[in-house]
Length: 407
View (spheres, rainbow, N blue to C red):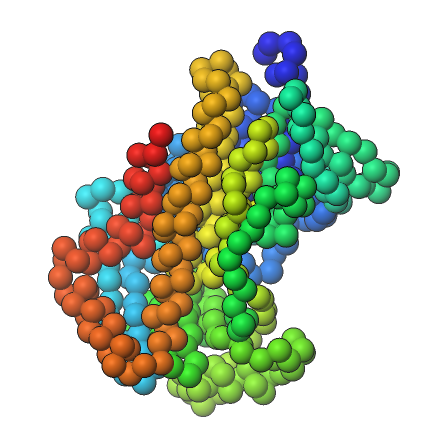
C-alpha cells in the first residue's frame, strides 16, 4: 500500500447493517476502516427483515450470501388481500427464475445480518469497530475527512481519507454537512405485534398486504429461532397516545382478534410490541467532497415493500466500489459524483415512489377507487406478462438496472 493518503482509513459513522456492509466490502479490497457507534452490542429489536433478489446477488459478490441464506427463509409468494373480501391476488416470484438464482424474498432479521458482518469485520485487518462511541460532528478539508467522537475516555477527533455517514435518519454527518432532508412525517405511527402463531395453514403467505379503509394491516414471517418462525403483524396507530397505552395487552389482543380470530378461541401469544414514527425523506445530496451518505442517513421511507434496508445495502456497495477504484488509482474522485447521481435518482424514482404507493393502496377509502385498484391487482396476477413487469419493479430489478445506466 502506498504511503501518504492511503495510510488514512475510511471512517464510517454507524455500525448497523449498512455501515457494516460498506466496511466489509472495503476490507475485502484491503482498505482500512474504522467504525464508530454508540451501541455495545447489535440491537436485536424487530427492524427490517427483507432481502430482495438483486440484493442477495450483490451480497454473493462479497461472499456473504451463502451464510445469509442459511439464516433466512424463502418467501416465494406475495399476497394482496382485503380485510373483508380476503385474498385479492397472489403473485409468484418464481416467474423471475430465468433471470435470478434467487426468485423469492429472503426474510432474515436485520440484527442477524448485522451480527454476521460484525463478526467478519472484527476478524479482518486493518479494520476496527469502536463501540460506545458517540459521533458529535463531522468535517472535511482538501486532504481528509474528520469525525469528532465522544467515548468513555473523552472526546477526540479522528482523521480519515474518506467518510461514510451511515448513522441513521437523524444523521450527525448529514447535519454537519448542512445537507437538507426534505419530505414528510406521517401523522400515524406503525404498531408491530410479533407472535409465534403460524398463519400459513390458513392461507397466508410470508408477505401479505391487507387493505382496509379503516385499519389496514400487513403480515410478514421471519425465521426467529426456527420453524415455523414468528409473524410480525403491522397496524396503523393514528393517535398520539403514550406507548404504554398503545401496548395495552387487551387492546393488542383485540387488534389481532379483529384481524384474524384465533382459530382455537385463545389469546394470541405476543412476544414483542414495537411502535415507530414513519417518514418519507431524502437528502439533498448523497455525496459532498470526501463524505458519503448511505442508508437512512440518505433516505428514509415507510417499510411497506421491504425496500429501505436493500437500498441502504446498495448504497454501501456502490460507495465502497467507487472508493476502491480511487484508492487503487483506477479512477479519480470525479467518479464520486456518479454515486450521488445513481443512488439519489433511484431513491426518488423507486424507493420513495413505490413505498408511498404501497401505503396508498392499503388505506384507500374511496370505494370506487379501491375496487378499481383491486381489479388491477387481479388482472396483474392473472397475466404472466403483467405479473412479471410488476415483480421486476417491486423486487428491485428495475431500480438496479436504472442505477447502472446512470453515468
